[in-house]
Image: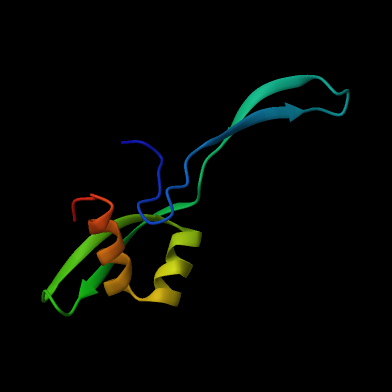
Amino acid sequence: MSARCQVTGRTVGFGNAVSHSHRRARRRWSPNLQVKTYYLPTENRRIRLRVSAKGIKVIDRDGIESVVARLRLAGERI
């Protein structure tokens, strides 16, 4: 499974690790992904989402119902 947030779409970032001597080596920055379970009261069921820390804040701000509606509109299967 790819390292991708279902809510924000954040993926892995790539770049260079620069040492003290300024030598460069390729590295990657993984998003802070968590598997969270949310309760949908309208459907009377729980859903599991793979979300980043920013995605959790978005759900707290907008509500799980509106976020799920947005995901379904975008074609995500939940």
